[in-house]
Length: 122
Image (tube, rainbow, N blue to C red; front, side, top):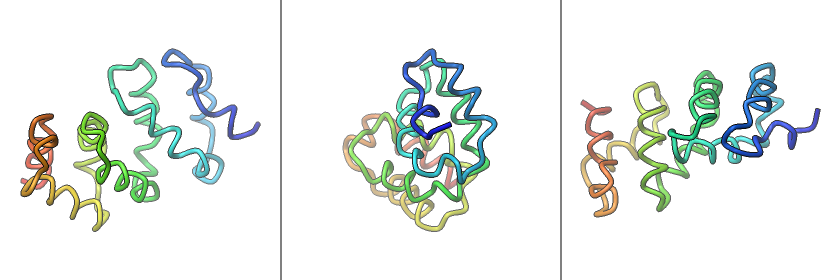
C-alpha cells in the first residue's frame, strides 16, 4: 500500500479513511499535510473520522497545525482550534493560540477564530 492510496479522493471516500485507521504514524507521516486538508471544513462527511484518527498523533503533527494557525485560511484555523486546541501541550501552538486570543487579526476576529482561542486559553 502506497501513501497515495491513503489520501481520500473525495468527501465521501470512507473506504480510504477505513484503510487509514490501520496505519501507524510512520506510515502516514509524509501525507499529514494532505490529510489535514480534509479538516478545512468539518462539515465534510469524512472530516470527523480523519480528525479522530489524527488526535492521538497531535503532538507529532503540531508543526503542521502551527503552519495552518499562522496562515490566512481563517475557517481552517477555526476548525483546527475546535478539533485540537483543547488537547495541545505544544508550546509553539499554545503561543499561537494565545496570540490569536489576545491579538487577533481582523479576519480572525470576524471569523470567530479569536473566540475559540479565548475559550481554549481560559
